[in-house]
Image (cartoon, rainbow, N blue to C red; front, side, top):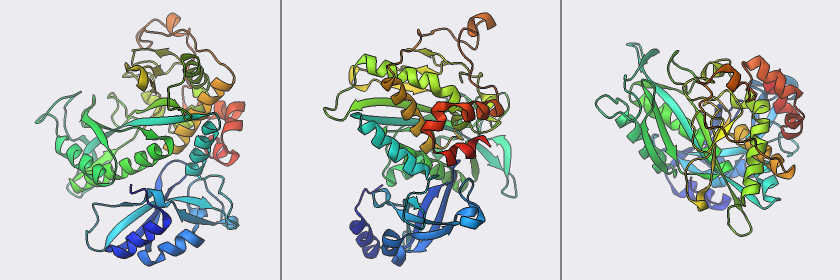
Length: 408
């Protein structure tokens, strides 16, 4: 992303061979949408917004009050490298506003930006690094998706067993061309399963990166005669697609890592509220076939090393302390997921919460008596919805419009 001003964006569009501008946003479930306008319309979009029919977008509005407006965020301008170099295409993420100019209550991106500001009022910045796994499947002779994975390779395998090596390389190169920084890529545990991790950033940029990443993966897969699946459990009996959220805190005033009591209280708040947030972190029926299997947690616990726990504290030096939330899956809306994680942690800090003792046992393998010492995550989507709807934390943390969308 180019991180330019409004004036610079207009000048760059006018001076470049860019003919189309995509104004992108997400519905309440994190599915990317966009309107394409002619490049000459960009200045008007900045000043007046571009109207669209919100009644056709999941979770937005009914036909009686359907008008909303998109206002592009100039800092998110990027060129789509898979589009023609002549008559190219630029993309902006957008703010969504009501006809009177006020923010739209179900604008998930705005909600995350407001959450960043809430933490800033307490001298805290939250940086996030996301790990979003995906499967690659073959197409049939008519170009339709099949359930046949690209390969039968396993964790960290190499070519020729790893059939996704060249696809991952192309994905990384495309991400770099769009201003993102891939750090590592590899074959994951399942057949045809892959992972590409990119550099951490502030929460809003991290969520934008996840949305961009999914678009790039799907586009590059299609260019290679494949289709990509971010579904929580694409193949029964194989590893699911996790969306691990790595969180680190910094004091804005001096750039230091908060002391241990603050970090522990943040983690305690996250542990306490994750069951109530599960309807958003794991939003599909299929999500619950992943939890409790293949190192995906289904209980509230933490560990300094064990990867089967809800929160893991990875080994790191003192200047890069972080915690990893491991229950979310790749169907989650990243804007809502990151915002709720931050609000849960802040609640833990403000209330001085203390985390329970760490657990280094694999709770997926121990006896029921031992495992039952740790609270369960919801067992299915209906249970998760009920818990979210009844939660005072969720009622206070999430705009009512969004809570209703996920619980009714």
